[in-house]
Amino acid sequence: MAMKKYEVALDTINEGTVFYPDFIPLMNEKCNCLMSLTEWEQFNEVSQEITTRDSSNILATKCIAFNELAREGSIDNAYMRLRELENIIDRKEGKNAILLFEIAQLFSRICGRNLKIIGLLQKFIGKCRKLEPLNADFAIELAYEHLMVGDFEKAYAGFQEASSLDESKIEAIAGMIECKIAQGEIDDAEQQIEFVNVLQMSVGKTSQTAYLEALLEIKKPSDSPEHFMNALKFVDNALKMQITYSKTLSSGFSMYSKLNPDFLYSLAELYLSHVSMKEMSEGGENATPTQPVGKGLKLL
Image: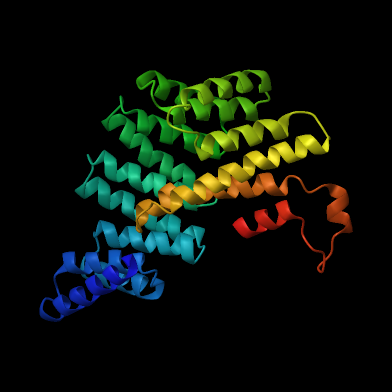
């Protein structure tokens, strides 16, 4: 049903461009419709056409950068386009913190934790923090990007600051817990997860909390089958909740930010972390993957 609406909208836009071929806002909307319809070739063609007419068009430059990174997998080209986008925003929307935040969040989730890309995106979110230093969401995003590149000390400090700015932000507490787990502070992390579970009793557990429980379980020293199965249950719960949540999302750039491919990759890593060296050495091209491995490979 939703796809049909976008198809109708695209037909209407195409009719409009016949009469107003140089009306850039109409072409911008065409890009949005094509993304919703996952018509990627046309999406890129229209984006490129817009930039030939308006070289400082923010949406079209963003679309091209998205295509380079998510569809073509070209880090260098995506980086170049993001640098270009940064310069355009500085000239036209330098005080638009929300725009900078949305771009940083989107591209950090789809870049595969590439250090070059994330380093640039940290500049975007750093500008957000200068514009609105008391915004907890901006502090959380910067901390999360530090976490993505393994800078756990900066990440923890950032999440801690975000929590002090807004105590209701569960994401900040979850971020601190993940940092503690990564640094081997298992007992502290376990106590904090119990605290988060109490806070979420009225609203329900999130996929992030289930992921942290799985991560914590995996870090505990044990080789028992029960421990293995318990950890898998948490990963399964996290995946199930994320899939359920994804079904509520509207198409567009925000869907990719909220779906969070980086998070799904983390879940895949947990599934694959259960593959022992013995299993890998015994496996071959024709080997049938175990259920956890199959789930991990499917996510990838």
